[in-house]
Image (tube, rainbow, N blue to C red; front, top):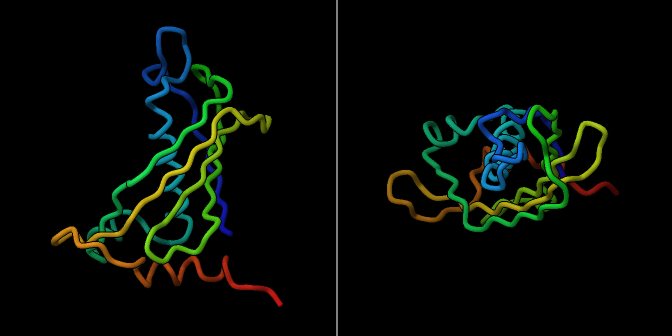
Length: 139
């Protein structure tokens, strides 16, 4: 299992009339978590797309709203990959207040396709190699 955490402050333009983080923006927060997690492994989405020729479209998105997030609130985005990716990659996300209170959780499943013809492929070896140490069994 691999977990990464990043922070994000709720901007005014991300809120609704009530001053709450607009529900449609949670998917963008999940993306921030994914992008920063991949960056922490020494990869970038740009490199995956441009150098490996692989795209990662979302196939499912689940979100559970527990409590609201407010304008100017500093949030923690905790992203976890709990299963080693072979054909798909699933990111579990928890959005927490700075004090650790859970306000939202979600799951995003992506597949890998070639940029050239959108043909589905297995997880690129470069990604598997970066994640392998986090999934090796300890005897």
